Length: 316
Picture 1 (spheres, helix red, strand yellow):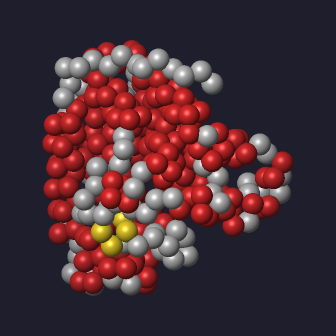
Picture 2 (cartoon, rainbow, N blue to C red):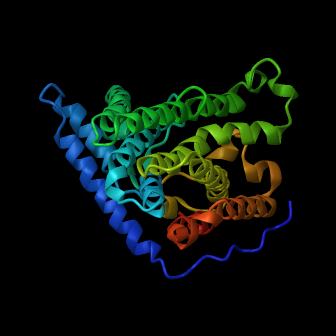
């Protein structure tokens, strides 16, 4: 794969400031959601949910959702419920990924993981509670009923057995029981095909859903939904490649989580399979393809273009 030339992105849109603005809007909405949990929610469970959901983070997925909505001419406010739902699903997945039965991590975003701050059972229940809360947040929003249903369906598929959870299952099988990877014929598949299949689901599905939910909230046409979905697919795989590279090249001080663990566990990763330089070339290509998918959206999509370049160049 040839190294792509760096995409040209307009410089008028100040992504850093607007990202902060949108992330703050999401944080305020998430805090309000926690405050609205009923009296029947045990205080320890509420605390664990709040500890994880409001922990410092970039809010990449909800910001993608809101930026897409704005790029299609709508106010970010109409997609705020969808953005919160995305962060809730993402947060639940991180809580469960960090558990001893999964990745067994002690740090997340520079502080103790949920099960270390509380206990394993509480962490499991906090993740369990966040899943239905995400769909409740969409279904009680002010979006039209048809958009609510479409949005809930997109999110459920992206997060479920054929999306994020399915990808996570195959990622674990590839590490611990490779003979079972992707079913009886798994070992016959090329490692690169296995790797792409895992991460299209484990990481890419939720990133693609983020832009699709933003487009749905904005009332996008089917053609426009297809365009933004292609963008989401491109940045989704690029995000995973850069994440794999950070595990090889970065430090716990920069990432806020343990590094170097993928190689120790024998995980199938992009740099492990293709090497560092080829992995970088692959990330360049996927970002270029993602940006090309936005061609018909004009300058209004400059925020999405800049975010794609951020994913390519990120160091945390």
